[in-house]
Length: 208
Length: 130
Image (cartoon, rainbow over the protein chains, first blue to last red):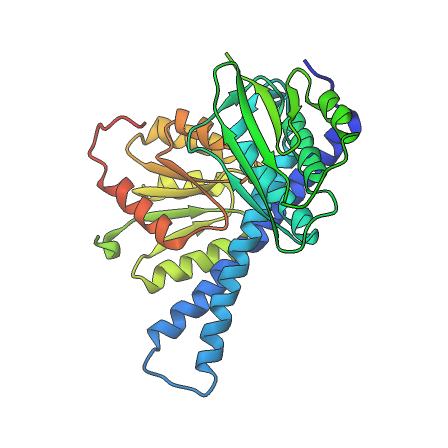
């Protein structure tokens, strides 16, 4: 079984507990906002000057809670990656969705939008979740490079027979530094990396 | 769905969350009882057997899965909807193995909870769980 550094286990344990607390906080905020909305509905015949402001604010609260939930999902999954049952295999589809969320901000700060496409079916791989996320994140960082204002980076996940493949197309006009590939290859073992000058492909071994 | 007749028990140690949830259900005509730990849940079930329990998995003291097992062993017709965390579905899957009807994640979508409770109540007797 792969060895996970104790630092990673510590970070994972504490982060998972923190995320659990955040879930409860978001849940309280959502129910509280929902209750105010319910009370407004029950008293819909009562009108007051700032009623539209209040309704708009409640919608905003719900929207932000949903936004926070998406980040909580991804960070909780990351926090649990050192868990024993995720060390030797995981669902690449589920963790690609997590990767898309975790990398989104980094890519946006480079002026680029992430266009991430995954299938609806699970794709089990014989690689731990932490390794999948680390190598995927590093690959996205490498491919986006310095970024491109209003650029788009397309990422596609496809199932295969021996390997499931994540294909990353850097934004048009971005030429990633070839030197980064060697480090990526090491991170992805027993998978492999291919770069043909215009697209990067990560090969993840299929779990039998 | 005749929500006025529902007999629901809500179990969660997060008081602000579960009390607010109960208030929202009450505005919809559902009178749900609320308790905040596993021991209190078992006592509440013994006092008045509910149709459905909405049960948090992670609580201090007796965990939700243990409550689920005890309830299902004594009252197999009671349906249990688990509230689980985001990071892993292991709790939810384990819960289903022990007879939970469904699991939902926080923050909750109230309409989804109501639909799930309605489905649980309508479940014909003797229907095996998925």
